[in-house]
Amino acid sequence: MGGVGRPGRASRNVNARAFRRPMRPGVFRRRRTVDTFTRVHPIQAVRWAPDRNAVRIIDQTALPERFIERDLRSLDDVCAAISSLAVRGAPAIGIAGAMGLVVSLDAFDDGSLDELRARIAEHVQRIVGTRPTAANLAWAVSAVAAEATRPLGSAAAALRAMRDKADALLADDAAMCRRIGELGESLLADGARVLTHCNAGALATTGIGTALAPVYVAAERGRRVSVLACETRPLLQGARLTAWELSRAGVPVRVITDGAAAAAMRDGRVDLVIVGADRIAANGDVANKIGTYALALAARHHGIPFYVAAPTSTFDAATASGSQIPIEQRGRGEVACIAGRAVVPNEVPVENPAFDVTPAELVSAIVSDRGVHRPPFRFDR
Ligand code: MRU
Image (cartoon, rainbow, N blue to C red; front, top):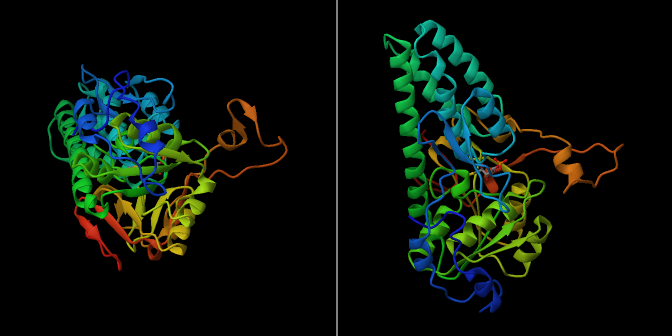
């Protein structure tokens, strides 16, 4: 689909118009979404560089001011891009890590298979260690590494098999997103007002996203859908990224502060909440961007359905419940500093957990590429 596109070809400012005259609180005028969808170029958050010796990513730290693509050519490049959130979102870091593993090993293709296998173990550990919460990272990187354990005869043959596997994961991720969109779009009635958090769209995957996939498919099919995007402190993925990609796709979007979400629900301006996930435990507990749990509580209080959308690669059958999910703790600077200015006194410590866990009992349904799962949750990976 062409719902998400390349900067420089931004669609008309339909967004401002769509929000100008509400039909009821939070519903906006019908717009020609489909036209917009078919004429913009898809976002490719992660892909091979033309020479296939580098992983090309959109540098998400620069959006929305600048659209910059970067080529990751070494282990250090790959680890730095994932740690700094230049590439981010559970599926996207999985694929970038898997492709990055291959690229980081290119120099070892004429050595021995044993030497390659030793390097693989070292590189896997470094890449997977960059971000602990998203199940997709370890899953995808391990799947590529496993190719080299087969009896392949040479390092070059092992690297070819690893590259083929990375290619397959790249294609599968996009296909899973599409499927989530098609399975989830029926949750969005005409006029649906969706609230989302962080960015679980095209920028976070190699396809049309997870939480935003049903939104894109519903809009593509001519339904009026509008989105309230929580800004998502401290790194503002909602304000910077979700707003950017929905706006250029022609989907009406408005940004609110995280603290405004519960009041929007109380005021009858939200029909449903859809978020992505970084890891889903066997019992249906969901780790996602910090602030998700508060949204789920508010949604339950106001009788609003709370949906999670995630591909198979996010499900972790080996983790029994959310209490066992490792939560990434990030640096002080992200919280204590805004636009280069200190906003927390130097002597005061901060906490910066990047994710929280929403208990399964607050989740109305989980939309995966395999179906719409309702509680009590039972998943087969
Ligand atoms: O820290 P981030 O920006 O990588 O966090 C991303 C999220 O929490 C997303 O909601 C999640 O990874 C799902 S992306 C399809």
